[in-house]
Image 1 (cartoon, helix red, strand yellow):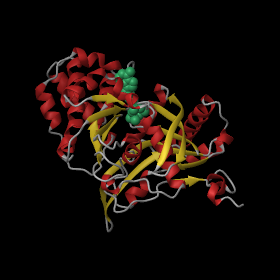
Image 2 (cartoon, protein in one colour; image 1 turned 90 degrees about the vertical axis):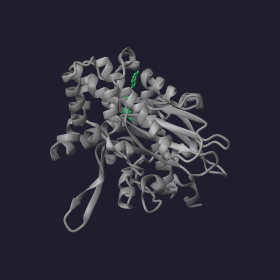
Image 3 (tube, rainbow, N blue to C red; image 1 turned 45 degrees about the vertical axis):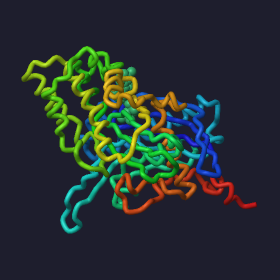
Image 4 (cartoon, protein in one colour; image 1 turned 120 degrees about the horizontal axis):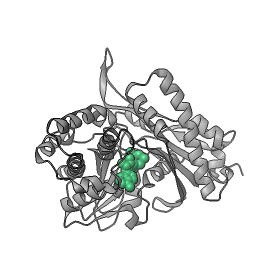
Length: 396
Ligand SMILES: Nc1ncnc2c1ncn2[C@@H]1O[C@H](COP(=O)(O)OP(=O)(O)O)[C@@H](O)[C@H]1O
Ligand SMILES: [Mg+2]
């Protein structure tokens, strides 16, 4: 099956699209990436998404849902073109959508108790209409309805792609938020520990954007952080953030580490006349140390740490991770045949495949859900969509 995975993370930097081929094997599946394409959001669109995530009106969210549907469809068509294929040759799309709100701790509501929720937008009906391809979207809500956090959902895919018979691995994804997956040697999902560790690029991007009035949206290659000194008092304060000591299952987002946190950091900086380089160095170190908290909940050794996500380009974070885990080797997804930027979009292609093959996608021990569940909502391409996807169901 040829499947496109579409993803835009909490950084809201743009849509990543991966085209993969998935083949069924005796033990599990084999996934091969055929093409990858990124469609960056223009700065103005990123700003609209970020502000709508905090204080958007119903009209803003309604409009953005349809607008982002077009962007996600364009990204899908882009990756299909770059593989020299046509839409007719692609079977399925899995779209994560764009998270605009994630409330895994829940909000108390009269009579019914605490209700957890999450909201990803980028209308899948638009994606199917523009591409003609059956699309699976809205993966997280089913896990939440089954008692989970709805996140992280990539660990099951990490297990499929990275599990090693003799080496225990820690997979790290440095997105806006960072998450880890511990894969003890062996197969399957037993012993797997995974959760969001806290902020990664989100805080650094926020500092850069505020300090440069939006001219610079990231600390490219971590250059500024590398010139700064870690402030041990601020680091101690950041490491005391209650999220870091909360045991898994846990997941987080911009609600906890977005603009309020940024205001606090910038006012700390101002009252102490701290150079921005030092603030960036301290927050980069915080990211690495938050990843290091994984050691509290992992039982067993780690033979290697394998890092992906946009943050692998940040040499400050990568240097601090390497120092923190030494002598355990810290490598990137590239050393294992995967593109660091692409893996999350690959994961949503695999999750969509699992849904149409009637396989569960969540790992209940990771998300806290009571059960394994088939994830997602499906927008069918047209009549006989399932027969076309599942050869075994085809009428002879
Ligand atoms: N060259 C680079 N140098 C430093 N940081 C980078 C670089 N390229 C990307 N990043 C960081 O990676 C982030 C995007 O990573 P990504 O994995 O797409 O996160 P998300 O899943 O949250 O969208 C950017 O916002 C930026 O902070
Ligand atoms: Mg991204």
